[in-house]
Image (cartoon, rainbow, N blue to C red; front, side, top):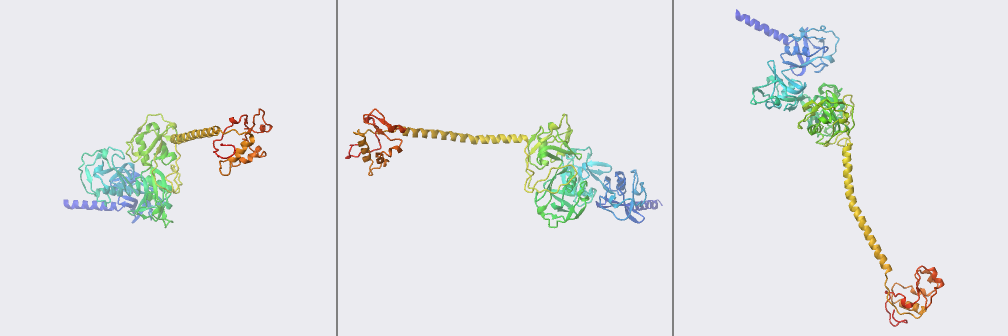
Length: 601
């Protein structure tokens, strides 16, 4: 009798469980514990309106389905549009109900809602803390207690199951070293050994962990997403989207600024800094997606954006989308130089120079994919800006991949806009092509032309002064040898001029015999300057003509034994009055010619 009673109780419990399980289901997710909420009523499945829908209501669904704890309660048809009747509207649960039908509501089938407002639920025995729903420090539910997981006991296969259970796409990066904070949860002593194809983490085998010395400093941090950036870093690269468990490339012509904002948000990478094209991060070998993304820009994940068949059917891997996201930006210069601003709670804030050092600069330039920091500037080199001054002091170690992973503390400086951090990084990016940018969200720096590394950089004042000094030194080094050559040339020309003057004024003439009269003198000269001996005075015979004497300035008129000057001599500048024939100068260029009248000359 007692046995029959026990069997009857077991039967009723099983029947109640079966009935309860058939009253609600989650559709459209990647596991039975995530999806669009549907309830069974009057023999028909219908959806639930998201009016007044919250985590308390979703927790009742998770408990009813034995799916662990509620992770999220998305609305707006997060898991797609339902069909048929919308059974429940304005649901209000207290949290103690065993089934969703026990919660208060406006009534069945009120017909004042549309399927675009279908409610959803994500339940899991895991959660990501310290980031977003799809990024953060991993914690596992064991009993009623959340435990932190040791990074040394976690691998890629485990990450795939976690992301699948959270309906967050695929793992983008497994982090460690307190990437999302230490937390205060107890460290789990089990090592997860997933194969990678499980739908939930509690289906994976476990074994006692050999890393018993693991502490909260080694907690697993995980980033899941339905998108990824390949060929650069976690926040920069060629865009690929997870479509039906396959990664596909996206055509640049079918991608704009609103789409970029959603991608960066889903990757927990801040805001888009630059939308690139023309194979900026390599062509890749993923299949080209045939859909065109049409995000509004406020979606949390890319798969929530509407899509339509792409009109660019001839798109190839040469036109892959490349994207750079960051939680920092440099304003007033170029992508890699300018006034530093950090994205904090969806607002761009300035950073005080007194609370910024070389390690912080290393992380900023790394996050922007701009190489290493060249110079940390101050004193309003790129303008004051109007962003609010951040009240936190960054304390990076220098090896972080993103600025938001650096510890912070309240700074003690009375900083103003005159003390903004201004930074110059070495630009090491690749050739890019801009995409269309039309956004009303936080502004980003403009894109670049198709053949440039980035926008032409306007050098800061400090760099410009250094450049001027360097150019001045180079110019001085070039001018010194030039001035020396000019001076040497002047000295040589002066010496040559003196030698020329000396040779013309110091002519030496040999002594000749005195002719008896003026006529004999010219006769001798004429005989010497014959056609047989040419000495350069071939026209000397013409001097015998009185008519030609007037044509020569250097005619020598010999007056024999006369103290008075001839009247015709006064017209010539260089006339010599020779009173004594012996004093007449001889010509050393006239040779001897024996046998001629007048003797030897």
